[in-house]
Image 1 (spheres, one colour):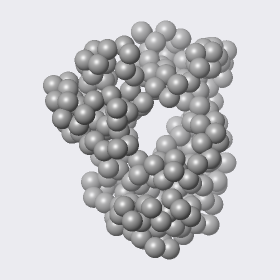
Image 2: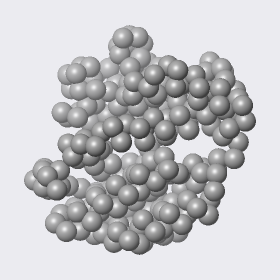
Image 3: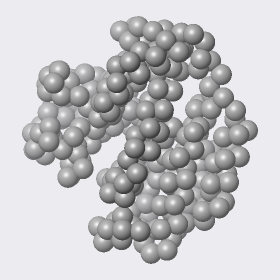
Image 4: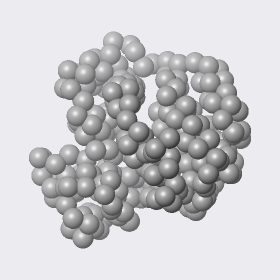
Length: 252
Protein backbone atom coordinates (compact mmCIF):
# COMPACT_ATOMS: atom_id res chain seq x y z
CA UNK A 1 0.00 0.00 0.00
CA UNK A 2 1.13 3.56 -0.64
CA UNK A 3 2.98 5.21 2.21
CA UNK A 4 0.33 7.87 2.80
CA UNK A 5 -2.24 5.19 3.55
CA UNK A 6 0.03 3.60 6.14
CA UNK A 7 0.63 6.97 7.74
CA UNK A 8 -3.12 7.57 7.91
CA UNK A 9 -3.40 4.29 9.80
CA UNK A 10 -0.69 5.36 12.24
CA UNK A 11 -2.46 8.67 12.80
CA UNK A 12 -5.68 6.81 13.50
CA UNK A 13 -4.03 4.63 16.11
CA UNK A 14 -2.35 7.62 17.71
CA UNK A 15 -5.73 9.33 18.22
CA UNK A 16 -6.51 13.07 18.00
CA UNK A 17 -9.35 12.18 15.66
CA UNK A 18 -11.52 15.21 16.35
CA UNK A 19 -8.74 17.49 15.15
CA UNK A 20 -8.02 15.33 12.11
CA UNK A 21 -11.71 15.11 11.22
CA UNK A 22 -12.10 18.86 11.44
CA UNK A 23 -9.14 19.32 9.08
CA UNK A 24 -10.59 16.71 6.69
CA UNK A 25 -13.97 18.45 6.59
CA UNK A 26 -12.23 21.77 5.94
CA UNK A 27 -10.39 20.32 2.94
CA UNK A 28 -13.48 18.63 1.57
CA UNK A 29 -15.42 21.90 1.93
CA UNK A 30 -12.70 23.84 0.15
CA UNK A 31 -12.74 21.40 -2.78
CA UNK A 32 -16.55 21.62 -3.02
CA UNK A 33 -16.40 25.44 -2.97
CA UNK A 34 -13.71 25.59 -5.67
CA UNK A 35 -15.56 23.05 -7.84
CA UNK A 36 -18.83 24.95 -7.44
CA UNK A 37 -17.18 28.23 -8.36
CA UNK A 38 -15.43 26.78 -11.43
CA UNK A 39 -18.17 24.61 -12.90
CA UNK A 40 -21.49 25.63 -11.40
CA UNK A 41 -23.65 24.29 -8.54
CA UNK A 42 -25.25 21.37 -10.40
CA UNK A 43 -23.34 18.11 -9.75
CA UNK A 44 -24.92 16.46 -12.80
CA UNK A 45 -23.27 19.01 -15.08
CA UNK A 46 -20.10 19.49 -13.02
CA UNK A 47 -18.02 16.28 -12.73
CA UNK A 48 -15.52 17.83 -10.31
CA UNK A 49 -18.31 18.95 -7.97
CA UNK A 50 -20.03 15.57 -8.22
CA UNK A 51 -16.82 13.85 -7.17
CA UNK A 52 -16.19 16.36 -4.35
CA UNK A 53 -19.68 15.83 -2.95
CA UNK A 54 -19.30 12.06 -3.29
CA UNK A 55 -16.08 12.19 -1.25
CA UNK A 56 -17.71 14.38 1.38
CA UNK A 57 -20.58 11.92 1.74
CA UNK A 58 -18.08 9.07 1.94
CA UNK A 59 -16.57 10.75 5.00
CA UNK A 60 -20.02 11.34 6.55
CA UNK A 61 -19.92 15.11 6.19
CA UNK A 62 -23.33 16.57 7.16
CA UNK A 63 -25.59 17.59 4.26
CA UNK A 64 -25.83 21.15 5.59
CA UNK A 65 -22.03 21.49 5.41
CA UNK A 66 -22.03 20.31 1.80
CA UNK A 67 -24.85 22.71 0.89
CA UNK A 68 -23.04 25.66 2.50
CA UNK A 69 -19.82 24.83 0.65
CA UNK A 70 -21.66 24.76 -2.70
CA UNK A 71 -23.40 28.06 -1.94
CA UNK A 72 -20.12 29.61 -0.83
CA UNK A 73 -18.66 28.93 -4.27
CA UNK A 74 -21.65 30.57 -5.92
CA UNK A 75 -21.28 33.58 -3.63
CA UNK A 76 -17.84 34.31 -5.00
CA UNK A 77 -15.64 32.35 -2.60
CA UNK A 78 -13.05 30.08 -4.14
CA UNK A 79 -12.20 32.35 -7.04
CA UNK A 80 -8.82 33.28 -5.61
CA UNK A 81 -7.64 29.73 -4.91
CA UNK A 82 -4.69 28.49 -6.92
CA UNK A 83 -3.74 24.83 -7.09
CA UNK A 84 -0.01 24.29 -6.66
CA UNK A 85 2.15 21.16 -6.39
CA UNK A 86 5.34 21.08 -4.34
CA UNK A 87 7.94 18.31 -4.38
CA UNK A 88 10.74 17.53 -1.99
CA UNK A 89 12.68 14.93 -0.07
CA UNK A 90 12.32 13.81 3.53
CA UNK A 91 14.67 11.90 5.84
CA UNK A 92 16.17 8.79 4.28
CA UNK A 93 15.68 10.13 0.75
CA UNK A 94 11.92 9.56 0.83
CA UNK A 95 10.15 11.43 -1.98
CA UNK A 96 7.20 13.63 -0.99
CA UNK A 97 4.56 15.34 -3.14
CA UNK A 98 2.40 18.05 -1.58
CA UNK A 99 -0.76 19.34 -3.29
CA UNK A 100 -2.03 22.70 -2.08
CA UNK A 101 -5.00 24.96 -2.81
CA UNK A 102 -4.14 28.46 -1.68
CA UNK A 103 -5.18 32.09 -2.03
CA UNK A 104 -1.62 33.16 -1.15
CA UNK A 105 1.08 31.29 -3.04
CA UNK A 106 3.92 32.99 -1.17
CA UNK A 107 2.48 31.98 2.20
CA UNK A 108 1.94 28.38 1.11
CA UNK A 109 5.45 28.06 -0.31
CA UNK A 110 7.01 29.58 2.82
CA UNK A 111 5.10 27.34 5.24
CA UNK A 112 5.78 24.18 3.23
CA UNK A 113 9.47 25.03 2.82
CA UNK A 114 9.76 25.65 6.57
CA UNK A 115 8.07 22.34 7.35
CA UNK A 116 10.61 20.51 5.20
CA UNK A 117 13.68 22.36 6.52
CA UNK A 118 12.74 21.97 10.19
CA UNK A 119 12.03 18.26 9.91
CA UNK A 120 15.00 16.78 8.09
CA UNK A 121 13.87 17.46 4.53
CA UNK A 122 14.36 19.86 1.67
CA UNK A 123 12.05 21.27 -0.98
CA UNK A 124 13.02 20.44 -4.56
CA UNK A 125 12.14 21.59 -8.05
CA UNK A 126 8.92 20.61 -9.79
CA UNK A 127 9.49 17.21 -11.35
CA UNK A 128 12.31 16.22 -8.99
CA UNK A 129 10.06 13.69 -7.24
CA UNK A 130 6.96 13.19 -9.40
CA UNK A 131 8.91 11.37 -12.13
CA UNK A 132 9.04 8.42 -9.71
CA UNK A 133 5.27 8.42 -9.18
CA UNK A 134 2.31 7.67 -11.44
CA UNK A 135 -0.86 9.75 -11.29
CA UNK A 136 -3.70 7.25 -11.09
CA UNK A 137 -7.24 7.03 -9.82
CA UNK A 138 -7.83 5.58 -6.36
CA UNK A 139 -11.18 4.45 -4.96
CA UNK A 140 -11.25 3.47 -1.29
CA UNK A 141 -13.91 1.28 0.30
CA UNK A 142 -14.23 0.18 3.91
CA UNK A 143 -12.94 -3.31 4.65
CA UNK A 144 -16.41 -4.64 5.56
CA UNK A 145 -17.97 -3.79 2.18
CA UNK A 146 -16.80 -7.09 0.65
CA UNK A 147 -14.14 -9.75 1.05
CA UNK A 148 -10.92 -9.37 -0.93
CA UNK A 149 -11.86 -11.84 -3.69
CA UNK A 150 -15.30 -10.32 -4.24
CA UNK A 151 -13.86 -6.81 -4.37
CA UNK A 152 -11.19 -7.93 -6.83
CA UNK A 153 -13.81 -9.49 -9.11
CA UNK A 154 -16.06 -6.41 -8.98
CA UNK A 155 -13.19 -3.98 -9.56
CA UNK A 156 -11.72 -5.85 -12.52
CA UNK A 157 -15.19 -6.18 -14.04
CA UNK A 158 -15.60 -2.40 -13.63
CA UNK A 159 -12.35 -1.76 -15.51
CA UNK A 160 -9.88 -1.22 -12.66
CA UNK A 161 -6.17 -1.90 -13.13
CA UNK A 162 -5.26 -3.13 -9.64
CA UNK A 163 -6.73 -3.78 -6.20
CA UNK A 164 -5.06 -3.88 -2.77
CA UNK A 165 -7.02 -5.13 0.22
CA UNK A 166 -6.09 -5.40 3.89
CA UNK A 167 -7.58 -4.72 7.32
CA UNK A 168 -7.64 -0.98 6.57
CA UNK A 169 -9.88 -1.32 3.53
CA UNK A 170 -9.95 -1.90 -0.22
CA UNK A 171 -7.95 0.36 -2.55
CA UNK A 172 -8.91 0.17 -6.21
CA UNK A 173 -6.55 1.74 -8.75
CA UNK A 174 -7.59 2.93 -12.20
CA UNK A 175 -6.14 4.72 -15.18
CA UNK A 176 -6.26 8.49 -14.81
CA UNK A 177 -9.02 8.88 -17.36
CA UNK A 178 -11.01 5.88 -16.12
CA UNK A 179 -11.62 6.98 -12.52
CA UNK A 180 -15.19 8.20 -12.90
CA UNK A 181 -16.24 5.29 -15.12
CA UNK A 182 -14.89 2.69 -12.69
CA UNK A 183 -16.37 4.56 -9.73
CA UNK A 184 -19.82 4.65 -11.34
CA UNK A 185 -19.64 0.95 -12.21
CA UNK A 186 -18.69 -0.01 -8.64
CA UNK A 187 -21.45 2.19 -7.24
CA UNK A 188 -23.95 0.42 -9.48
CA UNK A 189 -22.56 -2.96 -8.41
CA UNK A 190 -22.78 -2.33 -4.66
CA UNK A 191 -25.91 -0.19 -4.67
CA UNK A 192 -26.78 3.14 -3.08
CA UNK A 193 -26.38 1.80 0.46
CA UNK A 194 -22.60 1.54 -0.06
CA UNK A 195 -20.51 4.69 -0.52
CA UNK A 196 -16.80 4.84 -1.30
CA UNK A 197 -14.77 6.57 1.42
CA UNK A 198 -12.86 8.50 -1.23
CA UNK A 199 -12.55 8.69 -5.01
CA UNK A 200 -9.68 10.80 -6.30
CA UNK A 201 -6.56 11.11 -8.40
CA UNK A 202 -3.43 10.31 -6.40
CA UNK A 203 0.32 10.06 -6.89
CA UNK A 204 1.24 6.37 -6.54
CA UNK A 205 4.93 5.52 -6.04
CA UNK A 206 6.63 3.36 -8.64
CA UNK A 207 9.12 2.12 -6.05
CA UNK A 208 9.15 2.28 -2.26
CA UNK A 209 11.97 3.50 0.01
CA UNK A 210 12.44 1.42 3.21
CA UNK A 211 12.90 3.57 6.31
CA UNK A 212 13.16 2.86 10.04
CA UNK A 213 14.47 4.20 13.34
CA UNK A 214 15.11 7.89 13.91
CA UNK A 215 14.75 8.84 10.22
CA UNK A 216 11.30 7.22 10.21
CA UNK A 217 10.28 9.13 13.34
CA UNK A 218 11.45 12.42 11.81
CA UNK A 219 9.67 11.63 8.54
CA UNK A 220 6.39 11.01 10.36
CA UNK A 221 6.79 14.36 12.12
CA UNK A 222 7.34 16.06 8.75
CA UNK A 223 4.28 14.41 7.23
CA UNK A 224 2.22 15.38 10.27
CA UNK A 225 3.32 19.02 10.09
CA UNK A 226 2.56 19.18 6.36
CA UNK A 227 -0.83 17.57 6.91
CA UNK A 228 -1.79 20.25 9.44
CA UNK A 229 -1.09 23.23 7.14
CA UNK A 230 -4.30 24.98 6.07
CA UNK A 231 -3.24 25.32 2.43
CA UNK A 232 -2.31 21.64 2.03
CA UNK A 233 -4.91 19.36 0.46
CA UNK A 234 -2.97 16.09 -0.04
CA UNK A 235 0.43 14.64 0.85
CA UNK A 236 1.95 11.59 -0.86
CA UNK A 237 5.22 9.81 -0.17
CA UNK A 238 7.07 6.62 -1.11
CA UNK A 239 8.18 5.43 2.32
CA UNK A 240 7.98 1.73 3.17
CA UNK A 241 7.44 0.85 6.82
CA UNK A 242 7.57 -2.63 8.32
CA UNK A 243 4.76 -3.72 10.62
CA UNK A 244 7.18 -3.53 13.54
CA UNK A 245 8.13 0.00 12.62
CA UNK A 246 4.48 1.01 12.35
CA UNK A 247 3.83 -0.40 15.81
CA UNK A 248 6.77 1.57 17.21
CA UNK A 249 5.68 4.81 15.58
CA UNK A 250 2.08 4.38 16.70
CA UNK A 251 3.28 4.06 20.30
CA UNK A 252 5.37 7.27 20.24
